[in-house]
Image 1 (cartoon, helix red, strand yellow):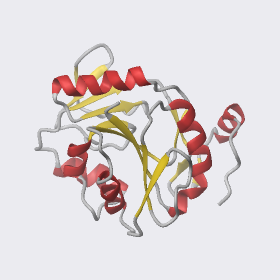
Image 2 (tube, helix red, strand yellow):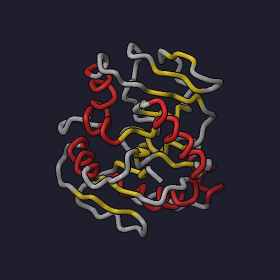
Image 3 (tube, one colour):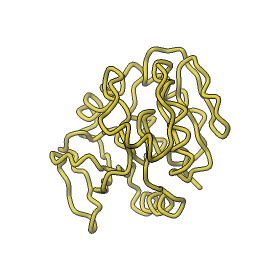
Image 4 (cartoon, rainbow, N blue to C red):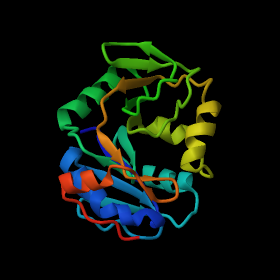
Length: 213
């Protein structure tokens, strides 16, 4: 496949890793997996841990991108616990579409957020207009690796990337698809390590571990 799974994380959220790996292995059918992290090694089989002690999210992610050899990355955050299957054929459909159209990003949107500026492309796929909010949203997305590297800045946090990045790249020819989907992942924690409502049900259904902070 022409795609790598890229996970962005850090030391303070390592308590999420055990369950993240359990669900990622179960639901995301990607062979090559790279993790951008801080000083703690992401020691799980099948994952390549790229460590950088920098406090900057952008610096760590850019370092990991240097080790990626595929044209595309599926970028997710460490608290995105997938609960539905994303198989090889679906991911190949996305990368083929990006190949044919020369677009740079395919966003998998399931939050129900309604303030995007969208242009219909097909039944449930849209083009995100350059006037839209959150052009650089960190909802799970397939990115052209070179595009992600180009628009990301070393000193940015994840929040900076979404907010400042969207504004700074508004006049760039972004070429972004967005597919409106039903929920397919559980956002495990909120800012401040607050466990999200619904955790007990997900933990029981997927037979996950209790968090150990």
